[in-house]
Length: 381
Image (tube, rainbow, N blue to C red):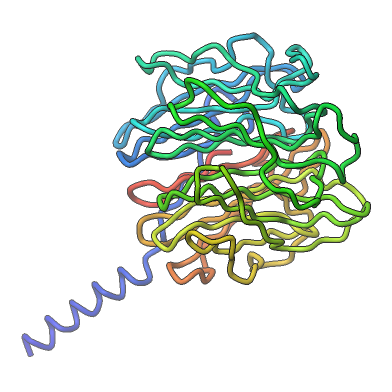
């Protein structure tokens, strides 16, 4: 009888562990900021970037929260020139990466207050050696012009930093079909960057008002996901992968979409125990796929559960158990906020019963970000 009781207790403990909900915490962006972008490092510290000010000419601020702390640090302004960032359109805001020795790197599209020699500026800054402030912003565009949709930044543990954007060459054709993904790279933690070069020669175009995402994974591969633009109505998702520190890229079409308009979309990438996951919008629905290590290959794209109507701006994070959260917006648009929605997936990539919506959770020009924590996930909106 005693053995039977012990067995029942053990089975109850196992069942409780199997069916226990994953902890998901919702948090408003600090200081009423918008367009939060968060990453966590190996120590569990959450690094957060957010936007404040006029939608056409505002500022980016950085805060961090160490594991076990309840509050974020005092905000530090990233841009050295006031009003150098832009939030309008939701696709041109700042992106953040953590690289060697925990150094923070930020890239963003410059506002009309900042002009480079070729027009609009693709700006970059990094946390200084003391971690107390950001170095003066730098424009990385020299061979390119007509910056539009948002660029991205990636960094690895070896000191490589990559800033990507899409544009045309200074002396090239101006239409979307001639846009390319360009990349400027640094091998000294962002101290210096080489002149930008095209990432891929294939003429896919690039959707003018859409953002992209770059991510340097633990296998040393630089992954870039962006939306192409061809023939006026092809707005397909492409994956680029480089195994030689952005010297060359392999590329593949991931997901086609015929639409005769720019959807003003964003893309998310995260890494977990099983590799890299990318998420994007197609036809009002959020899709995701696993990117295979060291190859420009991917699993069959899958849609998040539920009816996809006006779903935009995905965010994704994977924890150490392989559990995943995808968050997104519903009903957002030009000068229009909307609903925050999210779904938890188990370690096999299957949706769980954990999903929810927060009406009014996304402000005008807003989007969510999600990051894994020691106990679960943190969604900032």
